[in-house]
Amino acid sequence: IVNLLIELQRKTQLSFIFVSHDLNAIKVLSDQAMLLDHGQVIESGDPERVINSYNFLLARKSEGQELFVQPAEDQEMSYGNFKVEIITVRLLDKEGRESEIFISGQPFIIETLLRAKEEVPEITVGILIRDRFGQDIFGTNSCHLNKPVSLIPGKTYAVQYRIDELNIGSGMYTVTVAAHTEETHLSECYHWADRIRKFEIVGNSDFSFVGISRLKPAIEVHPVD
Image (cartoon, rainbow, N blue to C red; front, side, top):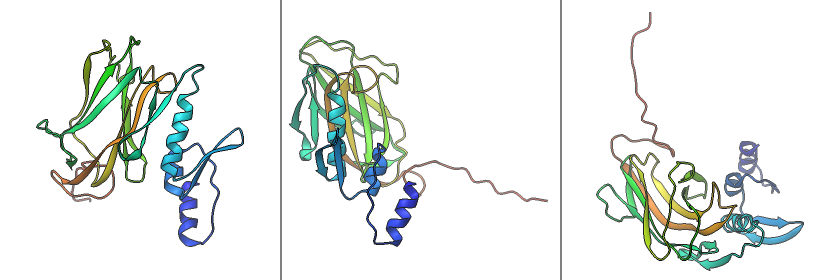
């Protein structure tokens, strides 16, 4: 249905009201978005910001949990109870140097500095890469990877995600980082830093291609009887 709506938008002057929980589809299709809660309008406007508010409301579902919102870089949303705080996020190249420009297929490191303000149970640290349209390109966390993270209050820790080959196409991307409990931020959200870093992919290390994914196909040519 998403492809059908995109085609109708391209060929007609019609406007559509699209109701969905498919966040990527909303980002792709919508010029404006509206968030409803029990029939009440919570927020409307830019789809990316409305979806951020939706994630924020989901994080508040834990009964009795108090969440705070603070501005992040470029006025993007940063929220949580801040028992664990994301101090900064660095994007590193294969030499360990901080950068905002990378080559497709080369190593890529996301380094997050964290500090626990009080005693907390075992935490989960996650990353999410989005393209310039706000679509989720790749995301995972330490719980899914079965790599538990433990922090001593008052000490600073670096959590590094190392990607040997950043197999995505040329373009602009953002990185979101989160610290929470269990598999998702819906249980208890310590700190969600949305789009805290931006980076650009320019060129490729071995061959040219179009699109998002760098699939590295092999070509075979042989005669057929």
